[in-house]
Length: 193
Image (cartoon, rainbow, N blue to C red; front, side, top):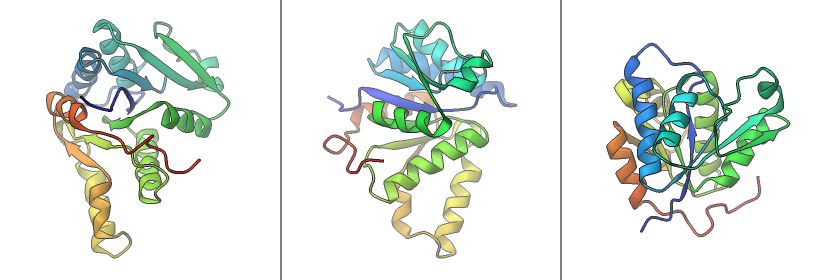
């Protein structure tokens, strides 16, 4: 049985330009619920964030949103989630999501998603945690980011073992299957962030 019970999902607050990304987000949320894993996400009701939460809720899953107060005030918080944690900043949101998750899944998104994805990979590189990280390359969305990481390796700015800090999948079913077989290191966190 998997040690992954709670999955933090990083994804866009916009739908993006490819309808397959929204479909993939909804399907992922539903599949996560079907696998008995809790969704931890950024708490939004729009774009990919809203779709993954709606999918998990439709699948009967538990959805925990983590949103900064200023975004809640802008009325972008999802009202239908199982629980909502309100933080004082974007940084404290990321830290709280980290604490609540056994693994991280990165769906397509924009600058905020890139920030979250790179920070969680960097924290793993620095040995601040050993939790699994999966980039879901739906319709090629993560190709450019993976190419940038590859470029850093080739140019000598990152060691070759950087490739082992994360995995890349290409679809919802494969990602769920992978999560079922992953296990975190004891307790996941090896240092206090």
